Amino acid sequence: MLRISYYGGIVAVPEWFWLVFVFAYGACIGSFLNVVIYRLPRDKSLTRPPSSCPACEKRIRFYDNIPLISWLLLGAKCRYCKARISPRYFVVELLTALLFVAVFVLYFITEYRRLGIEAPTGIGMFLAGGWLVYLNAVVLLAGLLAAAAIDLELWVIPLPVCWFVTVVGLISASAGVYIVNPDIVWTYKLWPSASARTAAVTVAAAVGLVISLVLLWAGVIKRSYQSETDEESPQEDRPDYPHRLEVLKEIVFLLPIIVCSMGGLWLSRHTSLGLKLSQVPAIAGFLGSLSGYLAGCGIVWATRILGTLGFGKEAMGMGDVHLMGAAGAVIGPVFVVIAFFIAPFFGLIWAGFQMFFKKTRQIPYGPFLSLAVFTVMIFHDWFRDYIATLYLYY
Image 1: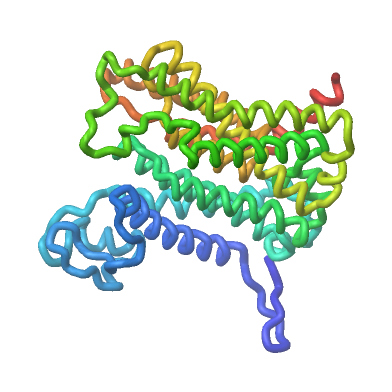
Image 2: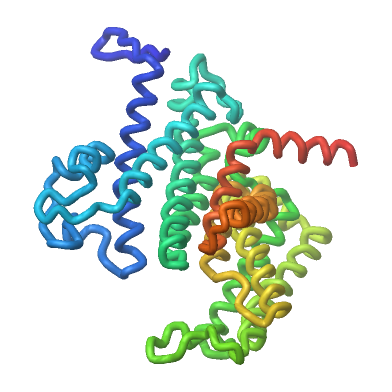
């Protein structure tokens, strides 16, 4: 337990108190995620109007909006019109609370994920800088949960969710070195941090991305699946729709990034640019996170392009590209690639479940990617140690 100074005295706070607090806090975040899941894909404001019943439009009072408890007390029905309240609200709040507690236990109670921060207790470790590691993790998990829930319902992943997680990852990796010793950050992989070669390649790839975006804005490069933004256009699910031609536009968009990346690789071997960048901890953290974003986007985008060229139909959505990019910004390039290759196993498990129980409902790929990222986060140290042994072996 932790002893905290309070008005000159010492108050003992047991660990179970922190777990209850984290559970309650996670449930509150889950309540907000329900707002995001319902409103964001429908282009509604997340703040206005206040929560109301979709059936009778009566404003929900604060005592009917208590996470988990209100749903149970109301019997999953609106107080006024008795319309059914979806179990999704309760499930999302409970899952978020459990995820927040699970990460807290793994990091600060059992120390299954080693942080390397010296402190007499797990709570002390949390207060000594572990809170930012924890914040980074739960923001990613909350974003993955919201994206998976929306994807399951509407087969779409809203990009603002991915962008928010990406920004948090970039800021955390840049600022984390001022809160936790950079040597600890690098040794225990608390945040992504770029090596000399990775730094040079990432800077060059970012320059290529800017060039591609400018060319896209200027109309030199054409946007793929342009008609998806036109409500009056037919859906691109016709058998004769030129999907292969559309992804060729995406290849053209990616060419400046690929060429600049190759140039960055050359620079890393013949100049000290990457070494100079990697020696500044904050810059190394930012570029490490950015490299994770580019790696996550890149591996899914490559699969999307190859699958579409091979099968003649859109293989994966751009939402999946941005989702893995966001995950990469938080967990880094190596771990996001590992997660990508784990995801198909969850797909196979689901396929086996469908065959055994003769279910026919298909689900999008986003939830499988989210489960894979969560798996990598749980077994982070195992993967880290295994990769280290490979380096030593070779």
